Amino acid sequence: MATTWVVVADAARSRIFSSLGGKRPLVELEVLTHPVARIAERELGSDEPGRSFDSQGQGRHAMGNKGAIKQHETEEFARQIAARLDAARKEDAFQHLILVAPPAMLGALRDHLPAPTAKRLFYELDKDLTQDTGDAIRARLPEFFPNNLR
Image 1 (cartoon, one colour):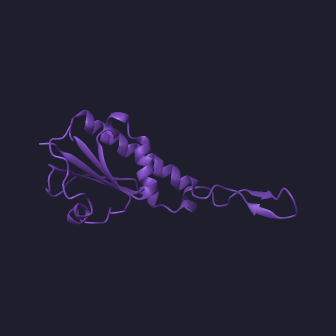
Image 2: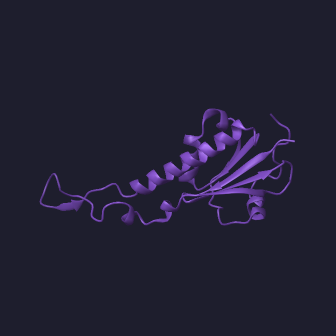
Image 3: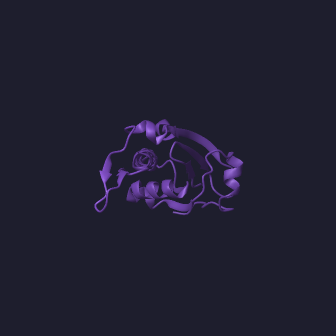
């Protein structure tokens, strides 16, 4: 019977579940965390952004790329999750993959999955369900998971 892994992630936490297909429930296998993502952006970078004069006129304004550090941390965690999934694929731990994450994290995960692992992607859901129970997560997914499809 084919095993489906369901990865439920946000920028700070990823939960990996397994199911043997059909309508079977999810069994939580592993939790990955990225605590740096929970730190306020102002604590991650310098306290004060640089300042610049307007190209026309007398005004000054703060420079900076607000959100860049948080985005970088999201990308780093997505790489870590993708590496974990690729290692599991190489061990043939799952045949099908489902990703559940908010849009930014879902895109980052997609971007960092190696092609052979991405080929096992069966379904995606752009929601943050990291705090939900396994049963609540299962209820948001397709009724039937793949069974013995390859």
